[in-house]
Image 1 (cartoon, rainbow, N blue to C red):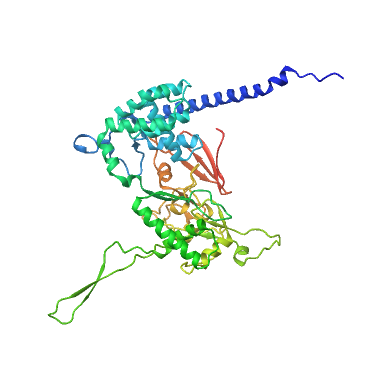
Image 2 (cartoon, rainbow, N blue to C red):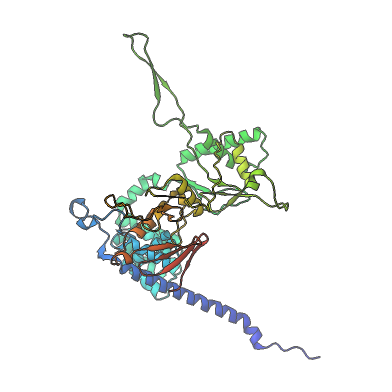
Length: 481
């Protein structure tokens, strides 16, 4: 019996796959370079006449052209010293065009400006395809704090080897540049230990609906960290003594909540005094009294179904009841909400059910609470493209401009009920500004962001350069031109 023949094509097939992957990566990197160059060109087209980042004139006074209408566009310093000032509103538009949030777009524009204007050697290596865009952007993040001379120092020493060194090398060069060219900053960085301290509770992280937890991280002063460790260890031990069967790690996590609720710190506003007088001529007897600071009220807006409240499964299929907690991006189990409510320190406020299908309107410009609550429940986030800011921290904007009545002509003015649940939308302050004020490159009303509220609850936005985006409760998609 003859043996099967193995063709050379089958032997070479794995190598073909590898070659295809490398070719695809090369095309991807070339496209990333094109995007970065386009972003830099866009920023250069929206600079303040090529003026470098110096908003102050002689004697530390603001330049005369810095007096702008409140809320209007401003030219900001996105790169380090010596880089051009860039229009804030132009960042909003390029971010939307690239499918980014405004904050992410701001970082991208700032890094492009930093590379082109302060790190020219690295920029040339990026545009030549010798340095990946992601690596160059990380270096630019580090150098924005440097003086112009310091940035040139890092650019000159790092550019030849940036494609094969890690970020540790770049950070060491940045630290050396600070010491060489900005000794005052180096001394301040050493003296100011507070700059490195932080404590973050990441409510923006994806919450696990089964556990209902959020990540916490921070950098503390050593003495504060030791005190916190002692307090957490002590409360965790108390929980075990009280009968808790949780693991040590879980008890330490619970201890943080117990410490927060107990508010055991002294009142830092000062000690109170009790003054009593025995008679008209006697001296006042002053006795210092120790008071404790009041616990800050933390408000959670939790949305539960009727089935979750009654702990009944109407379908009889053993489903899981979930609750939506505002300030987070996911759900928690209804049982988790029940545990929160069982705590003696929890104050529960039950609000009536609101039918969001009802149209509520008033004739005044001010938005009453009953309308504001409905609008924010209908759209929990800012309705600008790619923005995810919670609606409770946003302005409520009239989609169709409010036209006040004319006191001299009672028949004039806008139609009745202009302030309504169908004519209001939550906009964070930054995007409220870009909707209200024109872009610097535009002329008149047609060169500002504008939007329409469609009957199905979606919004269609049009940028100053006529790019359109459809925003619905699930996100943003660009519309064809």
